[in-house]
Image 1 (cartoon, rainbow over the protein chains, first blue to last red):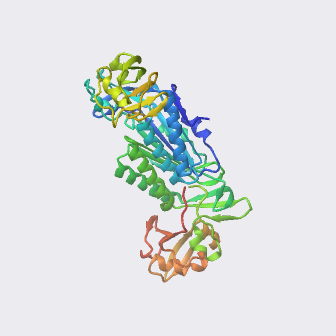
Image 2 (cartoon, chains in turn cyan, green, red, brown):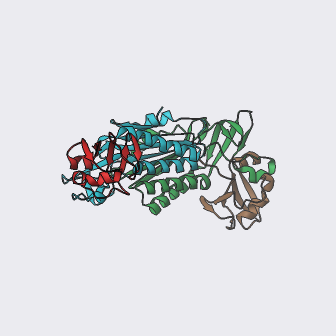
Image 3 (tube, rainbow over the protein chains, first blue to last red):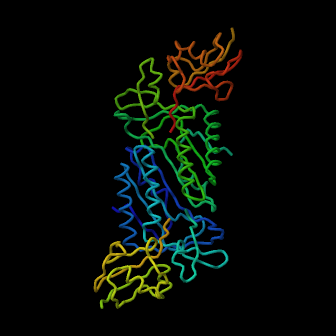
Amino acid sequence: MSRMVISDVSIDPQGLRADMADVRAGGFVVFEGWVRNHNDGREVQRLEYEVYHPLAISEGERIIAEACAAHGVVDAFAVHREGLLELGDCAVWVGVAARHRDEAFVACREIIDRMKIELPIWKKEHYVDGDSGWVNCERCASHGHTHKHTATS
Amino acid sequence: MSRMVISDVSIDPQGLRADMADVRAGGFVVFEGWVRNHNDGREVQRLEYEVYHPLAISEGERIIAEACAAHGVVDAFAVHREGLLELGDCAVWVGVAARHRDEAFVACREIIDRMKIELPIWKKEHYVDGDSGWVNCERCASHGHTHKHTATS
Amino acid sequence: MKQVAVEYFALFRERAGCAEEAVQTTATTAVELFKELEHRHGTDDPRGHCKVAINGAMADWDDNIADGDRVLLFPPVAGG
Amino acid sequence: MKQVAVEYFALFRERAGCAEEAVQTTATTAVELFKELEHRHGTDDPRGHCKVAINGAMADWDDNIADGDRVLLFPPVAGG
């Protein structure tokens, strides 16, 4: 079963946690990315994620498999949202269970760091002032898009 | 309100997570320590935690406050169990919400690392073979206790 | 002259005004194709921040393209 | 000669066979008191792995103890 899922409905941290229960694991680390109300000095109202499913899933699985192999973790799983998200919504969930906490922390951090820069997922911020913009597109700003950074982290 | 709690009943990750919701936070990291079925080559059946409440709480609060100040996180909270725990039970929960994920990861790791070595909390492992022993007491082993490490991590 | 199918995503799709189009090209590599299409997606150089996939797999900008290929042009990603 | 209340925890309590006792001592510091009580808690040197609290606060092993103090002897901790 795939360890990387794209979801168009709310992420369920409780259910995801229950699925990872394993008596071989002594340490469990979760990262959640939440939609926050500001970014780069602007007030954010909501976010919109666009995902290219086939490669987001296959590349996500590869990232998770490589982190599991490198750090000897018991299990890892990730979910990323697509579609419209409101303030406070969970945009991404990464859970790692390992025998010891060090492996769990390192693998979880590695997975989310790579997910943010390697998966074909794009984020559009909608601002309170009515403007909007694609995050990280300042370097392809021929047409005047200059928004930086991100309203989750 | 205290950000360090000692609990003699099951930890409720869902409720704890809900309490930390904050639209200023973009990153949320949780560490959970689970009771695992083996330690140092021995089969573990259950654990027993003894806690000296007054100093576990005040020292835990100090650790959390120092981590929050050092890393600029939005909020942090920790719960540690006492009493008898079975395999798979959650022994400790540490949650950190921050604007960005880096602060959340670093602060969460720092809090659990310090909780494990600074709080007056003792862990007795009960083994499948009927033996038992206090963890980390090999250095005060005048009376023959030689158990090392720990069945959570 | 070869014909390839080009798919645009996110910012590139908005700029191009379409998600997909057939393109006649003399480009040998993906980066050459990308630069030929600057008037569509609005970006001069993709290296270091944009990605490309060819026929369902992530590719390098220097990879060759062939007649009938499906080329996916990805603006800078921002997961999480 | 001073009298102090000594509390034992976890392994120390099991070895001493009690959680608390009144102790008559000539010890000046916490570490001296700890060593005097080796026959009770079974450990020769607490430094580096055992902890001590005096009158409700964490203390150093070289801290002085006074008549009437309450001294808590903590074996190696293992939270988490």
